[in-house]
Length: 324
Ligand code: NAD
Ligand code: UGA
Image (cartoon, rainbow, N blue to C red):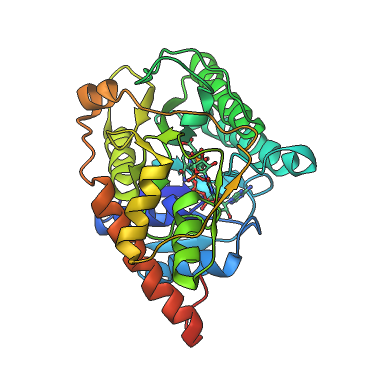
């Protein structure tokens, strides 16, 4: 019998890769997405174009804060919850509301529905942003959580809700704290996307701060692999770091991107962004031990793939056949 799952945020960057993987593995996938306008909904449609018409995939174009969850979850053995208002730096001021709605309220609604469905599996996309600034590098899952951004606060609130519904109702969840994910279809607000687009267009790039900030960049296929492993995991742990396995300064990334594009960037110095942490580096020993997770794609290869994807998609966009 075909196994059915629901993916929220199916048309997003990571969600669309996850749907592809699930379909390849023979799952029937119901993909929920409301195509928010945080970035171009047309770009999200192009994310799912490759599997939209394919047998086994059903798109539900609704908002998780209002959708009829009984109907959405009917027949599904589990949920991959990847819908969220993402983006660290945009979460201040009046723009906070979608963070609250999509990251906190939507997660609480989903948990209310799952508490009545014993045995359901839930893989939740959490974030390295729950840690905030830390001296513990690499950072283990038991490190203090003190988010620096309103976005991080909503991701941490969602984790607390997961734990409350586990303790109170036995909801079986796995929370994956992803560390800065990149690769083909990366969100256009993220650093690599902005640098590659600028490089291809001959525009300057801006560095927020002095470029010394470091990130544990994670290739999207590795993030998806971790989600699949977590879905199948039956052990006692609930929360896992998912990182690419190394820590790289932004300045070094820019050199790698420039070399891959064959350009010299015109670099503008900007202010360090509020909410941005100085360093992230995942201690992934728990994911390795419990899930058998090991990142496979290193930064140079991953950047090559993202640049190749952008070259193709910018060419298509300019030819009028696609619209990233
Ligand atoms: P994304 O914005 O590309 O994808 C999220 C998708 O969710 C979008 O397509 C959006 O339209 C949809 N969505 C948002 N609110 C919704 C709602 N209320 N109802 C239905 N659909 C809704 O973002 P992404 O980078 O693919 O991130 C996916 C998940 O991974 C998020 O939970 C994010 O917080 C988390 N995460 C991402 C990264 C990263 O580096 N990209 C790192 C850590 C955690
Ligand atoms: C990323 C995602 O965007 C978040 O959704 C996610 O939750 C977070 O990772 C995580 O790990 O949890 P971030 O690390 O800020 O957040 O990723 P990028 O947008 O790729 O930025 C990386 C660094 O580049 C940041 O220090 C940022 O300030 C900097 N940057 C970004 C620039 O200097 N210039 C730019 O034009 C864009």
